[in-house]
Length: 498
Image 1 (tube, rainbow, N blue to C red):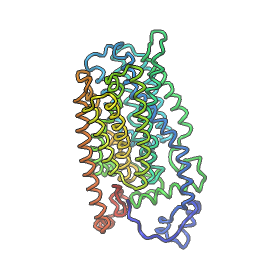
Image 2 (tube, one colour):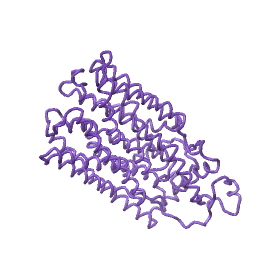
Image 3 (cartoon, helix red, strand yellow):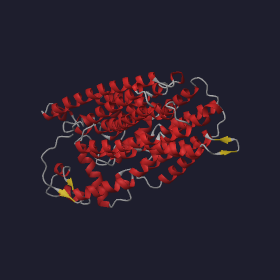
Image 4 (cartoon, rainbow, N blue to C red):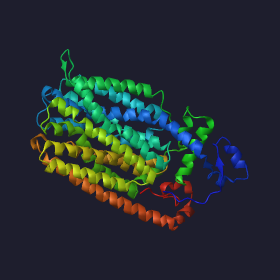
């Protein structure tokens, strides 16, 4: 959290009279400190909430459905029809993550150049088409190709949405908005399970059961992506649903929230520089929180991909197993919303991460030690409630602690890139030879969560140490080294969120 200097009590309704301010008795330095009227600030936030967050929710909902529906297709005949013997199914899962990982950082770099309001929906249209054609495949090679291109087009979405939201919201408004769209991930498990149950009953012209999961869900994704292109704004300055003074105030409040970390008055004016890239990588927050996210992704992905399989091994039949994936995911949605809301309220991330990991570990212990299916099924609720809130938490945590735009774009992309490398482990945690107990898979996830807690604690310790140094003025010497607009998150007035 940034150190607050004592400010003159200047409040403006907006920033409509920006030029007048600069010429008035308020000096230019003081003009930069003019606060936004709280009522106007709330109005801007509510408008962003109405015009941005619902569309991002849909983007992430369909992304997770189209990524994870292969798990539903597996128990509806995919394995038998395409002769996925041995580890072929796991390989099909893994191939998705190769382009998904490689595209993260470069995609974030071009987001602003190609206009975010067009770029993100364009990605959606592309992966929706790929998903639709996956339903037409008759071979293992076709499935592999489809998963590869699905990963290529989905790869830029998550990091892109986070840095996109960071253009519009203050640092401690950000996480709840990430939570609002991210709760679509567990909801996709609930919604996807219900949808797959119905679609798998379709039999038409040689395409029976599982192909229709891909075909119908992919087609809906394409339509949603096309519609979204007409509504998402690119930046606060280009938000047509705001009045002129609201647009100016929206830009100015982001300048205030940067606390010296950005010299540009508008994110649209920030220019790419390799300096920002180097700054993103040469940073303990990026390193520690990327490793933390890596360790967290192992249980998140294995849970999402294998939940139907895990439930079916508890003795439930095909349709029942699909339907039983719904309640744990609904619980996860509630957990995401509550945790992200209160995390923004108290302006803290680490303590919620520690709590979530502890809850998930308890869930895996129930799966390992439970003797009755009801107890083991109860463990899936704790896992979902623990790991799903931790994912937006760790991403929002790093985004809070990086600035300006291209530093955040690079660091966030790198974090997601490193984290998704865990998919190569996650997709092989639950092997058919370990059924029905899956002791190896559950044990791997417990180990990953324990290490996640260790790196979370290290991050909190480093951030507390650095903030105290800035409180004592031990970083003020940086101001004398040159242009303070190039300091980014190194600026002495900038405080890390812990």
